[in-house]
Image (cartoon, rainbow, N blue to C red):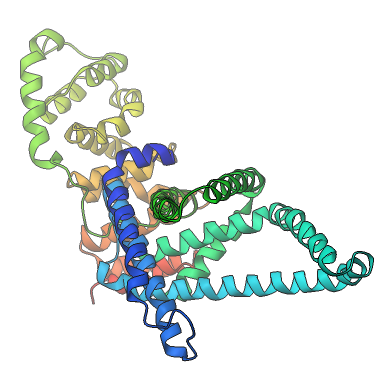
Length: 448
């Protein structure tokens, strides 16, 4: 899907709207406080003042991510998001879980500081005494705290990844807060090698940015500082939403699989006519004589040269001396044709290839999933299932095996109208992935 910068460039409108919303929340929250700003002994006003910003901030993040994920993922068949009305409560519960974890980490840090003080404090007080002891302990803290943060950099980065992925699951699935938290934790923990070595560099950059920001705040008026704080929260929201999408695509590629919706396109209606007009305008100058036989290389050249009417593709294939060799020659073009306005031609070629050899695409598993999605988007879910069958049977170690299996089950239930067969298939898949909640979700969506 590209880097964070490329993603931000493509979806800057969504990110900007989210940033404006978070700025409004930052301005609004102090005006909605119900507790006394001086002394407040009651618990419920403090609780409201804690839960209100937590709810608003988590909701803005979730809605911003929902809009970005739908816009960015729809073209790839990955645009499924949960309704916005389900996000506030689940987002709040998830935020409370993370707040509780943060409190636990803070208590552990305070315990560590207390133990350190007990170990070194008496000697410092004895040697320097009074103010000098406090200054010495302060100097220790200035050097020790950043050092501890840097040494435990993989822990902090890992927590950030789990935090983002858990909110992603709230948006993409109907999981409860605790399930989303638990699954996200397991996903990131199983692949800690992805971020371990980079965590130290990232922490150094964060520390440098924090130090520069604190230094600037020392010399700025209060009004400018408040404005800059809101601006930084806007930038942080934009970066965190974009980063969360990258994290989703890295750690959980099956999220967002659209169940029943086709990517927005005009392939089915508009492509054949466009292909036909382009073909008729150029056929006389590029196509050989009607009775001239074609070799595989010439067939591949003609397919790659220009758009053609599907009937003309069938005619050209019929003139090939060796159809199997001709289809093998155009193998590198299948995915590019399917992902372009020439989907109708890709359907003709895919049907011919699968008729010639049901395992035609089994030798190239990396194109199986995107090709199947485009064939289904072109109205041929039956062909998509035929493409996926060898992949699901034989490529259980492939990173997209679960995604492909779930999509195949969906097509069997919806496109082929065989929910019982899909239910049986998902039951067998559950034996292979016993802890995968997406299988349970898809079973719930099956009719009957």
